[in-house]
Image (cartoon, rainbow, N blue to C red):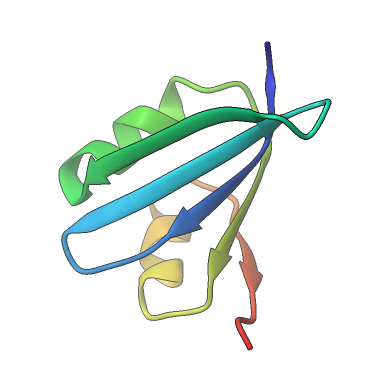
Length: 73
């Protein structure tokens, strides 16, 4: 089972991660502390990551992750 897309809910200290596979079925649901985020994503195969636009996006991009910022309405 390979994760195709991940939704990342950003917060100050805890991040919620939700991923789906090629059949759009839940493949991942995880809560990460801020210190765990980069290490977690470094271990995954490349995939699309959607996240809300916020002040954290430039920081995450600087640390080596390509981010697709999605506007929440």
